[in-house]
Length: 137
Image 1 (spheres, rainbow, N blue to C red):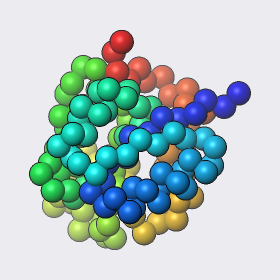
Image 2: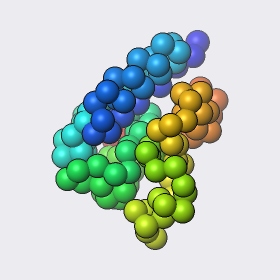
Image 3: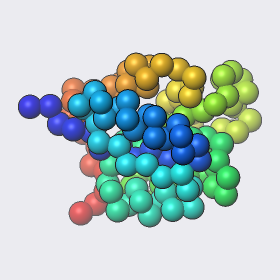
């Protein structure tokens, strides 16, 4: 039996969140919890203990990169894989935002959903048997 992958999606574009949630859940492989508020994202991720978090790089209040850094430093969320989502097309244009932070996998918002699913599969191979233990219980 295929495990349903729980994903937290954080993006300030509510319409994009709704669209991606619908398309990912239509595959039958994902449960997607969304928030458009970067300020509440950390608490949501701690509460939901997702298998993966997809985070927009450029958001108001807290940048996606800063959120990933904070989550990576918290013991209960350090094992969660992150995937960046960006409206910026060029990887060179993303680098000033990312800075010296290790570049997490990155998917363009303009990419087909199949590309997003492929990136998820690369992060969570073998139907979620990725060996990480997100969220301490």
